[in-house]
Amino acid sequence: QVQLVESGGGSVQSGGSLRLSCAINGLTYRRYCMGWFRKAPEKERERVATITSDGRIGYGDSVKGRFTISQDNVKNALYLQMNGLKPEDTAMYYCAAGRRWGGYCYEADFTYWGQGTQVTVSS
Image 1 (cartoon, rainbow, N blue to C red):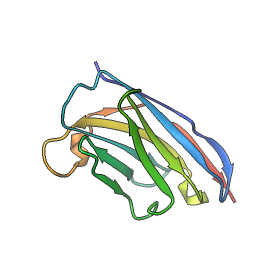
Image 2 (spheres, rainbow, N blue to C red):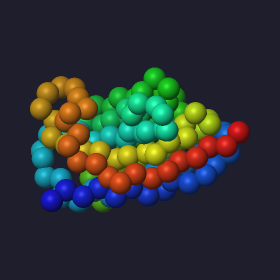
Image 3 (tube, rainbow, N blue to C red):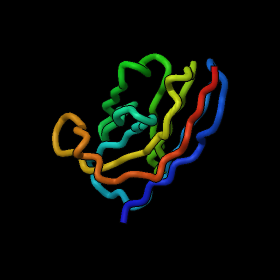
Image 4 (cartoon, one colour):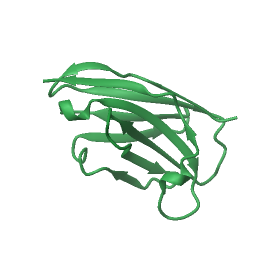
């Protein structure tokens, strides 16, 4: 059974930084997708950053240049370093993972999700 547990959320002022962590257990696919998504009230879920088993990384346009996704295969962990936070980054952030079937990680490939961690950025 795959389990994902996020941590590291909190409240910061605009311009601040946070580092989210996701502990991933039970994911045994050789080819996989991992990523961070976020959901703000009354907004659609948004893809923040993704990383594949062969190291391909992608970012949403709204976070490019500010957020960095990384993984630690020894610790079975996924991270999201968030710098230059803005009030519009306020959302529940979710870690997600799944088997990668093609060259791109489609949202449907993310079959396992964590419970989320709240990030609040004040102006």
